[in-house]
Image 1: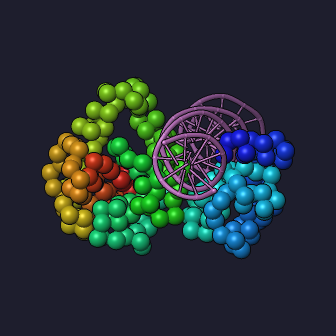
Image 2: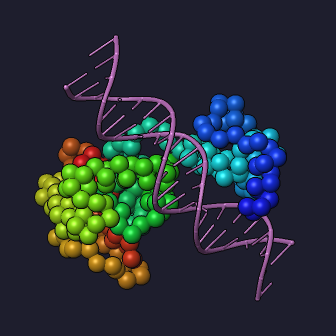
Image 3: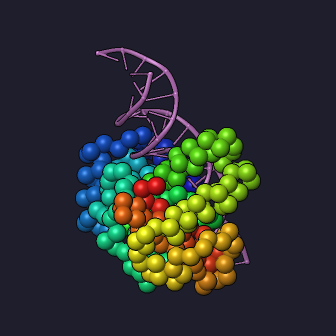
Length: 217
DNA sequence: AATGGGATCAACCGCTAGTTA
DNA sequence: CTAACTAGCGGTTGATCCCAT
């Protein structure tokens, strides 16, 4: 790819930087007519002086019809499905901490949100907390603080809430928080709490992944 | 009203896994 | 089997926005 793409890039004098409205329209029109995929040829055929990669990113993160714009806000659980932990996590709109998790997988749990958006959101918050703790986000100190201070505190809020709803919507129900361990394949533990204020917390462990989502905390 | 700093967003880059010829 | 190509991912960065002073 690199060789062919590189040659094409040289020939085409490719554009970089922010997309214009015209470019957006061309891309959206072309995809509406011909569909997604084969991004390099798509870019070429649509007459866009962009790499296929750039087109794909623009489409997935911005132009796609189901992408929700604006701030990540609490409470929009219309797509909630209790049949899976992933569906359960769709309750939550703000991510507090995804351990060992891929952004794309989290994005799948939050319809209309892109991995890029979630990644940005997470990073700003993690960095903020790390700063408050005066330590590096990758340090053991920070990770321990997350696991043993922050997450138990979130879980305690779930347990203490007077009107815990959907506690068993996942499989675990709200319970006493235990320090996370990596679960076996198929094992899952989900705690969900909804507060009067409208805040929602979801603490979940699915297989080897541990997810902690929260709204409005 | 001006400005500086932090937060957020959009986009690019390098890498890798999967697919195809 | 292998090389070429494609798609997708996470990390990073620069631009812009927002808000406190």
